[in-house]
Length: 113
Image: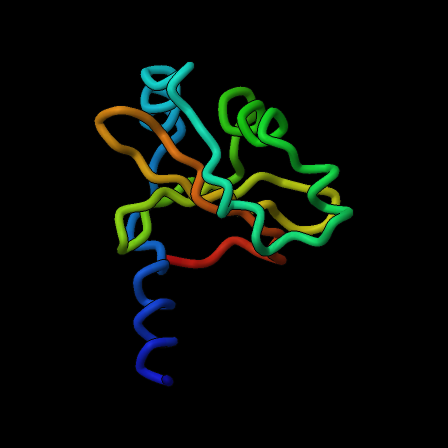
């Protein structure tokens, strides 16, 4: 069990920072091909599900400037958007066909690389 937890944490560890220009090119290239995986909502309470809809997440990813962007060891991207309290960590994966928002949650800080 402990090994499984360590492996999952290791896989989601950010290994590389991505600059905003590179992020913008990636997002602009995929506009109209970004979707939200239904699994993305599994961490949320009912109240949070009313606030964070697909449209909200898509708009955040395509229109807002993240406070930090990085690539995780598992090759997914992690973006951190400033909130009133803490950051919204939005994780997405890039395929040849689209960008898929995998999950998101509120966190207190941006991790150090």
